[in-house]
Length: 262
View 1 (cartoon, rainbow, N blue to C red):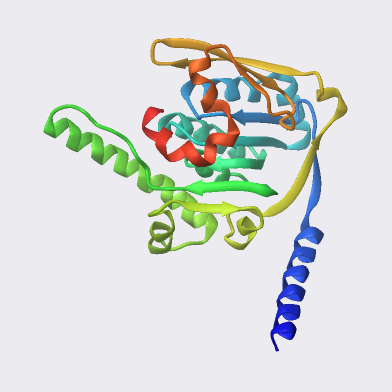
View 2: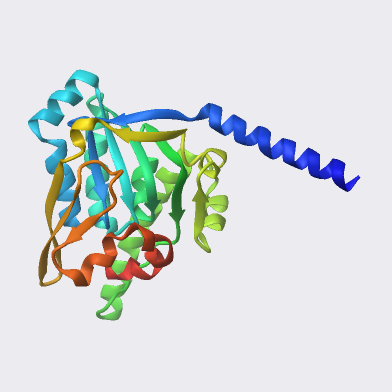
């Protein structure tokens, strides 16, 4: 009986893996057809993304195809900076541009952005996470009260967009994020946090393309440099005290701890 049960379990698991494999498609990232969202979501990152989206070559491609792809590899970050980017993506959608998103790590505010995409793609190894909003307040009692009300309103607006896209009641959503909601690989299809499972590669001409952008944190200004093709994971940060924020291997362990730092 134990042998028979083991065989049945193995058969079911194997069948599920075959179904996932059949569902996977290949996506090729091509120059001027996609934009990177790499690292913590800050005002500087949002500016860099908006600058790329308004590059004449990218605009020409968007107008020709009526679509743009965003590659997301982010632990989240500032709700205010993310909301600013979110409204611009909605502006593009109102103009008839389809927003396709391919996410490798999409956590916190990056999770919100991902759910706003028209087509949500993950790989078999992508990691998503959503949790309760966290922030710190200082000041007088009344200023804290009004500031909390503002953050609570923003939080409710973002949650409504997320849960409607995923298809959750507010109660179910709150239960999932209460202790951090982690979704890995094929679970994204099961939980409806993604639409498609894909694997990706880059067009050959991207191999030697490098992107450099300026970042600010408090009184510090530094530069972040990475390959245009997100297959290459090396990220150079001119100020080493901030390098860990761009190390995707630390996202899973540090994302919650980092929230109040952004």
